[in-house]
Amino acid sequence: MKKLFFDMDGVLVNFQSGIDKLSEETKREYEGRLDEVPGIFSLMDPMPGAIEAVHTLSEYYDMYILSTAPWKNTTAYSDKIAWLTKHFGDLFKKRVIITHCKNLCDGDYLVDDRAKNGASQFPGEWVQFGTERYPDWEEVTRYLISETFLHDEDDEKLNRRKVNYMLVEKTIKTLDAYMESLNAQCEQGVSDELKSKILKLTRLTNQWLEVSGEQNENKYYDV
Ligand SMILES: [Mg+2]
Picture 1 (tube, rainbow, N blue to C red):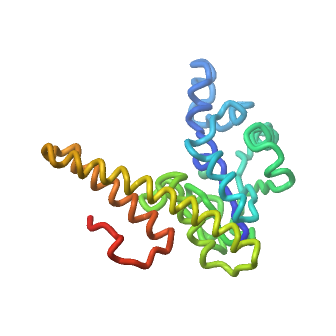
Picture 2 (cartoon, rainbow, N blue to C red):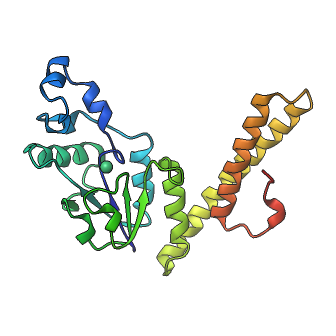
Picture 3 (cartoon, rainbow, N blue to C red):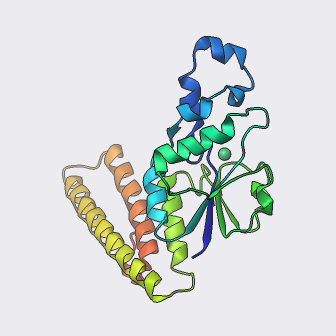
């Protein structure tokens, strides 16, 4: 299995949600250095889709946390472990690396939102979360699963791929059915809203067709 590392803040963890829970007084006291508020990490919510994505990817990758804790916030280390245990149980037990030098860790993929602390010099592939290419967990999951199609295979992996193919197939069928219903609506007139829906759906379906490895070009929709 390939090694996959996850950053925490801005990737698994919604940093802002913790700030929103602080009192105005605390916000004033720690202005400009909010990541130093004691216990702030335990207040944060997960990023949308992060929990589900991590569980999905655990089928395909050997996974670790690769995160940085603010140097002056002494509770950040334990808060991060508590957060991971609360949201993932034992999934990352003894698989947490806290460092300011992410470039020294040997892995295949790192999902990280920022170039800082060695992320941009990571020896494997840096999947930059929150960019146009990888805007959210849906896209990151799709990319990382499609990458596994290219990795070396053994029987166990092949079986997982088959399961995944079934999921992709099911998804494409659902999207096809939705497209048909939108096309039917076109007969009553084409509004701008309908046009943009069709365009969005076309892009999404093409992405899924790409993931499925569908070779039949006729199945691709024109955008
Ligand atoms: Mg980050």
